[in-house]
Length: 97
Image (spheres, rainbow, N blue to C red):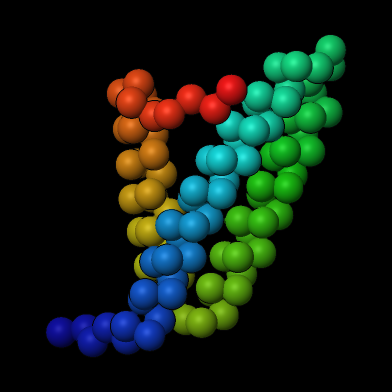
């Protein structure tokens, strides 16, 4: 049986959850700003570049902690993303105007 080091799993999972929330929040803001511009391509490009850089930076830090931390990061990211997408698709998410 594999022994889990919870001092690696918990921070990895939490970092993945935070990364997913920030990534999807940045995506929503980037799209909102882009729709208000005449040429949305630059806004979308900058939004994507910032989100990718932040996600890779956080992932790089978590990967330095160890394999269990990066696996927990991926699980936390995917679980949080799944929950956020399900809530938004259900129409129950609060709208920011």
